[in-house]
Length: 61
Ligand SMILES: [Zn+2]
Image (cartoon, rainbow, N blue to C red; front, side, top):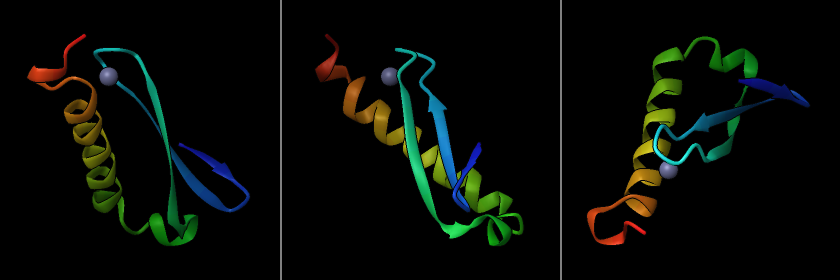
């Protein structure tokens, strides 16, 4: 995670295609420090969405 102008930005790297997805978080960094579980959930959702979108069984290459 990196801080950009007070915002937290996720940077996830897909284990399959090594593609990197960036997602800005709407909450402030200070608030997010208290919600580590929610942060992981957001990251998990992002990865699941990417897997479904790019690596579903019907959409492989
Ligand atoms: Zn991928």
